[in-house]
Length: 137
Image (cartoon, rainbow, N blue to C red; front, side, top):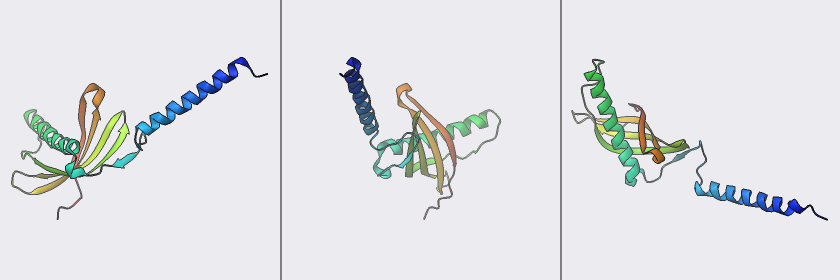
């Protein structure tokens, strides 16, 4: 004779496994911690807006450094477009962007930007913004 709790345990185990598989499928192939390419970067409005945010935040920080007497660049950058993007599922989404800008002199410049978004707290933070080695042809 089978144990009375055996069937319940089996059903509970099946339910846990089924819900776990469905949760993983909800990520649509994104693995927590894994980095994936963002497709259609030039038409992706969210990615382009993150690139614009990166440039604006960089300019704001440069102005703040100047106001605090810490130096900083006098020249403001203008956002052109994001040319490449990757994202990583962390405590939120971390985006790695290659951003094309133009200087006030009209010269194109490329930058690598890292932005973290935490939608549940409406947070967006620029972690890094550095010149890129990618050449503009």
